[in-house]
Figure (cartoon, rainbow, N blue to C red):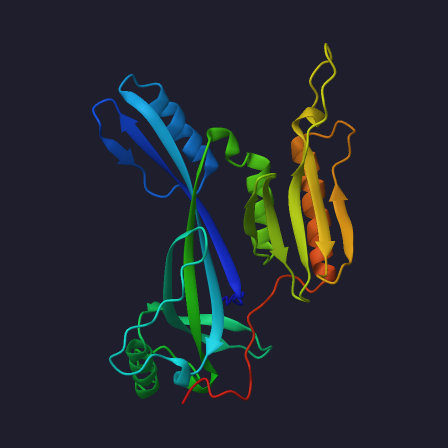
Length: 286
């Protein structure tokens, strides 16, 4: 069985398309995880005479995981208290799940994806421990089980079609995830950049660079579309440029491939992505 270590944070981005027609009705798609699918929906509905306007919304789900103990759970019959709603967030949820501690100290998921209350956590643990001898039981050393306290925050923002990531940006994000790196989108007035935390506490920031100004009468080149900039910093005033797009006519795909290679090489030098680890000595189970 393949087990993947859990990270302290994980972000998921998807989009919805709302179609407002001339009759006053609004139809909204389910979550679309591909920017290409969003563009297809936009093209399809914008061609219809009954469409009055189209609204695009980007949704970011930020999941933060911490290890807790039975003593940190809500009491018997108590609901799970929610944290304060962060600035700019639409909704925040809190729940629990179990993880299993591996030999290297990392944690991997175990059991139900969501346990809503302390009562559900205690019941699942007791049920798992009691049924280990049954033939249909999932075998696990209950001493390795840990409780995760998880906060899920939902952010939304309205955007235009031009704000969607292109295929190269999608490829970059996919390769980061394949390498075990998680990323957090940061939206600012100057644009959106990706923050990539690393295992040693440092981070990388990946952003777009402005396109070159095209001289009047000159032919457009790939350089006119802008490039990439990746910077590593350790939060102590030390920063190093990891990658900057060369203005030498690279195709966007080749430029993104070079960026990805540089980012992954830097990540390896700093231990890869953060991994949620066991905190030995604490009574996580009873």
